[in-house]
Amino acid sequence: MLEAFLVDGRLKEIPARWEKRMVVLRHISRVFEPGVRYPEKDVNVLLRAFHDDHAALRRYLVESELLSREANVYWRSGGPVDL
Image (cartoon, rainbow, N blue to C red; front, side, top):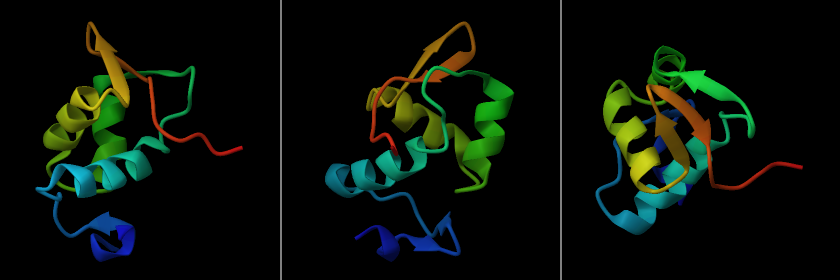
């Protein structure tokens, strides 16, 4: 299902349906290393590689508890981990 939303690694669109959006968000969450804290500007750069609406992606990642945030610093708090 993920391939339906990606072209050359970028999102064609952010899925509206929650189930499909979660598949995409879990995929995107893998760019954040567990245990690393990221300033908001770095999060924006990483997310802009997937879609121009990086603010929406950031908000969805936080709402779905894949990223956590405090004082404009973000860290990965969920999602799959590659071993």
